[in-house]
Image (tube, rainbow, N blue to C red; front, side, top):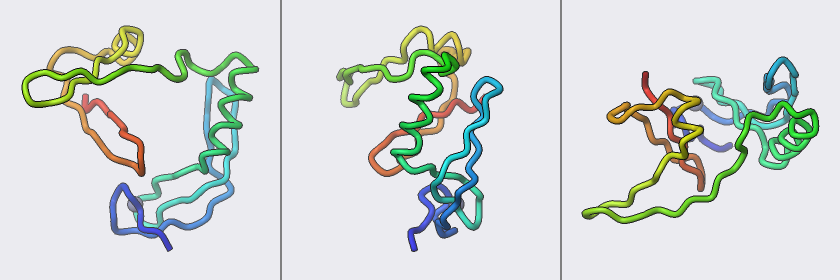
Length: 112
Ligand SMILES: [Zn+2]
């Protein structure tokens, strides 16, 4: 069994009742759930299907996917946050964020 990438303690157990609530529409997805922290990891193709349906319904929060390149400054790489996400999530300069690596994805979470 796979270890949970979030807490690194629990194991991922199959789940068929992962609930996605998008704008009052409820989607039920298949995926895996951590036995310790209960973090849910819907399967990639499930997420994709849900996004397609949500888009058809017009409830998928814009913009879905943005393409950006990293730039270099000093020794490090810089990622520019798109303006609409900045506004939507009320991000400010110096907002502390948490960066988590989940597989080959990077999740950026503001810590308000
Ligand atoms: Zn966990």
